[in-house]
Image (cartoon, rainbow, N blue to C red):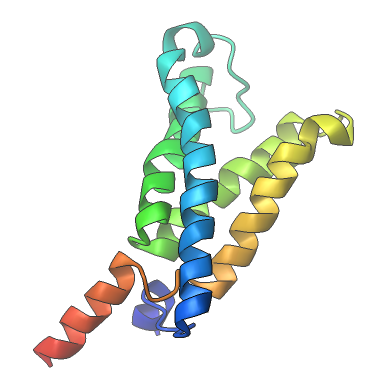
Length: 143
């Protein structure tokens, strides 16, 4: 059960898998850009970064950077795909429903778009052009 959750083997169609790869690269690179901006401005942002979890501004910023940078790289490569998407989905959910809760839709639109894409991509899976797929082949070959 856990194996199929972490290493989905569908969709197998090459065209769909190429589309999913393109989506992973596009949205992953866009999110990485946000993570790099936060990383570069860590000293300036850490004192005043929103702290919706009550763990401190610096820790909240670190978690946001992890979700937007480290997990986005794993997302692009399709490595531990669904596991890496959980922090990305949580980060966008917090941004949309907590940080920008009282803002106009124009302000929270980007978080909404990211969250929508990530939730949909979570359910579809990475396709066959991913490290997860390669791991499946290696594990099945050893049996």
